[in-house]
Image 1 (cartoon, rainbow, N blue to C red):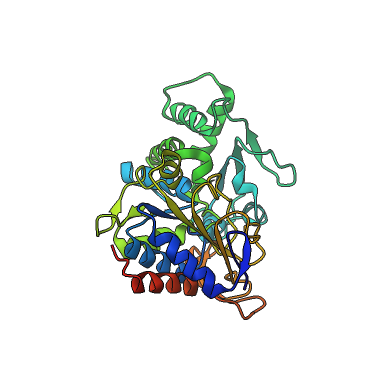
Image 2 (cartoon, rainbow, N blue to C red; image 1 turned 90 degrees about the vertical axis):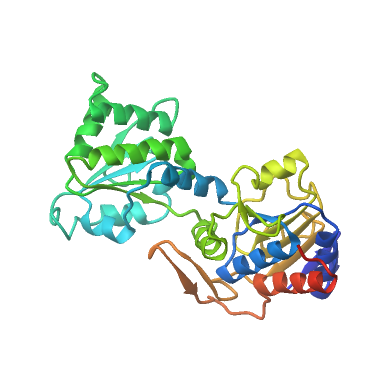
Length: 358
């Protein structure tokens, strides 16, 4: 395990001490990223409580696009297994669902359970890449994007608009479903688009059965939502500055806090790969990253500590997209590596020894 302090190689003990000093000197620290195993997320929440810091996962935009619709009017969802086993009509929104193996798995077989068992499965896409490798009917999105397209589609489905053959045809196909599913990525669709989509699904359920299958982000956002809920009773953007967890998606948006100058120090946690934020290195920062990550060069933060990658060099509880649950991932090639949870706990212990406590 490697570590750097101000660009120079250091042992882990020295890096932990420097990290504790940096965070102890801050007035408004933020813990961001949170792309890590559940034990590391738990340790991050404990550290934030000790520091009086706020937390913000890198998957925040997608999380809050979904939670916004959930809080506004509820959602109707299904699972991957139910989609593969029951859906006779599948609408694929945007580009992201085409990544990975889900669409290929759905296309490879007909429904095998429920009223649609044995029926031919119709694959439809709206605003997607028109992937010619998989047979489907593709509809172009409006120039205004997916949210506007969903608004138009809902208007056609309700009979409030007429005359545009493509959206009228798509609406007809959706209403013909015995068990329909819409697959989408919440961040790609956006909060307004998710809200419009859930309204369309409610409209469809007046005469048929229709559900949403939201893709989990690849940065452990689903795990962060669950851990935050059982730890604080709230969604992940929380702050401990007033001695208790407070939830505020705007106030505790780390990018906004740093851009406005509110935050004066940050801890970036990414034992699993995550997109590096533009602000990394623009303020005093501790980076705890997986071995072999681009940040593990001692140049992107004042203090960098590398840790084992869960599911690769160390084990850890991670969100399992296929099963839709948090499950333990065995290491593929176990190594003598310290975990992110261990490093965070050591930093917290040093802070407590220094008398830092919110």
